[in-house]
Each structure stands twice: as structure tokens, then as C-alpha cells.
Length: 203
Image (cartoon, rainbow, N blue to C red):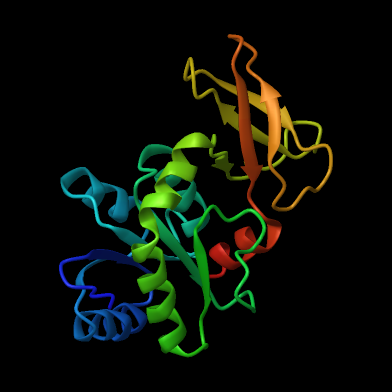
């Protein structure tokens, strides 16, 4: 029988009441829990210790869950991840979200517990899959250039140089590829969904 004892969960959400309620639930279920109010704070905590699993809200100020989960997949493929949001329904991971599972806020918390237990239980196989794939970078929108055309800035994962790319068409959630302008590397990325940007600005 699965026992969550000693498994560490990092919970990331800018809503204090949600952090407190889910923390109590996880602790009562036998997990060790730490919390962070946004993606930047979560990354600072990851410098000190790595949890077994991260549960992160998607729409947060400073650094959203979209970006955080993408960074985690690329830098810490051994960590299981669950995205959560009230902006989506169903159990499927939304397009453009790099996570192992999805929890729709407002759903039964029993579903969240079952998902976490399942991910921890199957983490070995999932980690192998993570390490074999090249996770795309999540790229926020940078606005419009001097001609009014929307653009993003891509930082090459190989040479770490940044270059500007026009947003030719809306490809919400699609994994895009572009060659670096300075080295032979090909970069994979996802452009921030428009809805996510609007929601973050309204927080």
C-alpha cells in the first residue's frame, strides 16, 4: 500500500488561503510540505533542497506557474509536477503547460491527493521519460516593436545569447523551434498564452 511518509512536496500559490488549506491537507496525509508564493521564491527554495513533487498554480505575479514548471522540467527533471488553476476544466494538462498532472481548482481535493500519490508511485518511469526529452522553454511576451509587431526574446540554451523573434501567428500552447542566430543550436519554446498574460496583469 502506498505511503506518502517522508515525501516532500513544494506548494506554490500566491493565494495564502489556498496555500494554507492544501498544506493542511497534505500534512494530514503524511507529506512534508514547504510553500512559496510565486515562481521566483520557489526557485530560491530549490537551491537549498529538492522536493519529490511540486504543485504549482499557473497564474501568479512575478513568475507564473507556466514559466516555473518549464524551468523545473529543464533543470530538475527528477521532480514530479502538478499544475493547478481555476482557468481550465477537466483532468488533462492544458496546452503549453509542462507538467505531469493537472488539478482544476474547485474540484475535489481527494482528486489532488490521488494524483500526487500516483505520480510519486510512478516517478521512476516518469523521470526516465523526462530525461530523454528536450523540454521547451516557456517564453513571456515582450510587447510590440517600433512597427507595432508583437515579438518575443529567445535565449539560446547552448550559448546563452538572446535574440528577438517576431510573433507571426498565434500558436497557443504549441511547441515552436528556431535556430540560434549565433550558434548551431536549435531552441524549442512555447509562447505565453494571451489569457495567462491578461490574468496575471489583473492580479
